[in-house]
Length: 133
Length: 134
Image 1 (cartoon, each protein chain N blue to C red):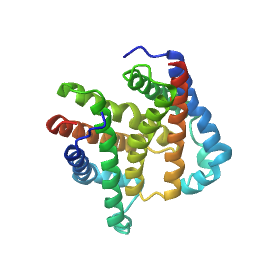
Image 2: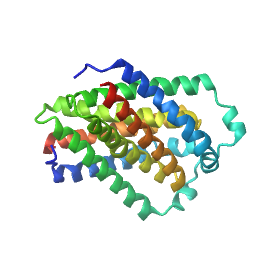
Image 3: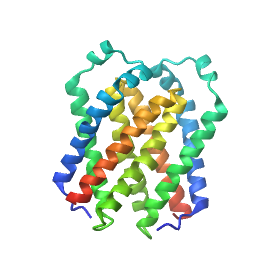
Image 4: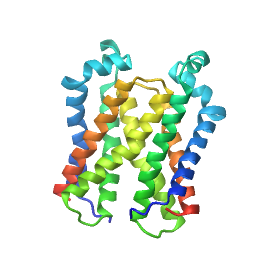
């Protein structure tokens, strides 16, 4: 159950950036900036190496743990991998974000953008693990 | 694997909820407000029934998914149940929160408070599933 395709782990981690580039780019960047109150100047003030490097490490780790969970199910059909990955995002990540955002008084729209991002990202990771093992 | 223990699920959700009361209360309430820049008046302005009601609903949902995942592994030692519960928080929730906080420039301290909360929350749920069965 620790036999995980490293190619799938790396591709899954990269998938988070790929979806992120679209999601927090052409799709929802303007709404996200408005809802989170992060203007263009604040965006520029971010340290890109720290932000992208940190995110890459975090997502490599998450992809590795996802691969591990999927491997415990043996060799399920790709559809099952996608369902499990989707379930992880919905059952664990979205619920956690929901609680944090409620208490922090963040808007429903920001929650929808950020929660939706993880659902789409994990579904794509499920597709990658489903087809690469 | 779908035979989830409903009592354990409800108690697990309640346990996580209680941890939250301590974590964002006496333990780190002040630090959390400081990092967000909230005042007590602002917090009182929120609709508490909605916030606590939805939080409990989210907690039950996460307990359902955790119970379901644990049941998939069948009979396990207490150690394995704890490792899986904490692993879910550490492997999925913490990286997701970390990524969002990095991009929205939240402080490391706020990340530590919020990420730490989920680790303790899931550990508490793990304890309940160990005691009551998943």
